[in-house]
View 1 (cartoon, one colour):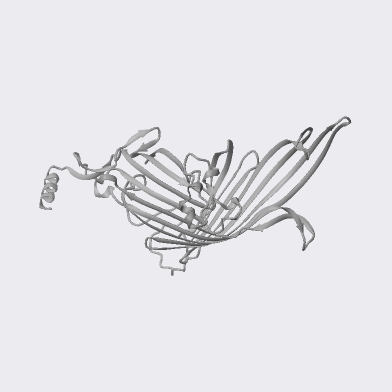
View 2 (view 1 turned 90 degrees about the horizontal axis):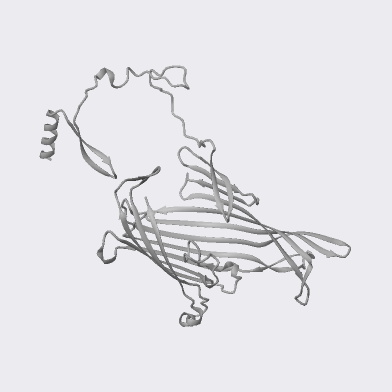
Length: 418
C-alpha cells in the first residue's frame, strides 16, 4: 500500500495520471502523459436552473409536494418485426411487449403467418406483485395441408377415374395458468393447462364418366384431442459463477423433477352418441401419471481446469403404457438424441432414457477479434456423445429383457461463440 501511494505521488509530480483501462477483454494499467487542466468556471453548471422541453417554466427550487402511492402504469405497447424460415416457407410476424415501470406486470406476445395462412400466436402475462409470481400462457397454432389420391374399391383395386382431393386444416389451442416461486437455489412451478386440437376436412371427389365429370363436395370439422394437465415442477441449480460459465461450464449441478397427471380424451374413430343421437368423434380416456427427471453434472476431467465436461441424464416414465402412442415420449430432435428426427420410431415409447456427455475445449479466451460488425471474445469447441432408448418397461423383469432395449447412439460437434 505504501509503495502504491509513493508511485502515485511520483506521477503527480511528473504531471502524469495513472489509471485503470478496460481493453481487449481485460483491465490494464495505463498512463496519461499530458494533463490539460480545465478551468473551474468551465466545469459543472451555472446555478441550479434547468430547462426541459416539456416544461415552459424553469426549475429553480425543490418541489415540496406530498408524495402519492405508486399505481400500476404500463408502458406503451411496443412492436418489433421478425421473419422466420419454417418448413421451407417464409413466415413474417411481429413481437409485442408492454411492462409496468416497476416490473410488477408484463405482457409479451408474438404472431407469425406465412403464405399458406399457417398462423402462430403466443401471448404471455406475468404478475409479479406478490410471491409467488402468477402467469398465464396462451398458444394458438394452425396448419394447412393438401393431399390427393385415387379411390380404392373394396377389393383393393385403384379406380383411376375417381380422384380424392383433401384440404386439411389443423387448429391447436393450449392455455396455461400457473404460479412460480423461488427460494435460494430452488425454483418451483405449479401449473394447470387445457389443450384442444381440432381438425377441419374439406373434401372434393371428382369422377370421370362418359358423359363428363361428376363432382362431390364434403366438409366436416371435429375435435380429436381434449386434455387437462396438473403439474408440479422442482428445479435446483448450483453452478460455477465465472465469466465463461455459460459456454464452458466446469463445476456445478442441475436437477429438475416434473410430476404430471393428465386427463386425456383422444379420438378413437367415429360413432353415434347414444345420449344425443348424433354422429361424431368417439373419445377414449387416456389418463396417465407422468414423471420426468433431468440431471446435469459439470466437472473437469483429469484435473484439467481449462477443459469442461457435462454429464447429463434424461428419464421419462408413464404409469399407463397402454395409452395411445400420441402421448408417448419422443426421444429424438433438438431436446433428445440429435441426429434423429423427433418422431424416430425406435425412440418413441412409454419410457425415455437418454445419457449424454459433452466435453468442451476453449480455442481462445479473453481476446477481441472483429468480424464484420461482430466482436468475438471467446471461442469454445465441443464434442457430444449420446445414447438413448425408449423401452416398454412394464415389470421389473423387463429391465433385463434384451428384446425391448433398442439403443441409439449419436455423436455431435458444436462451436460456442461469445
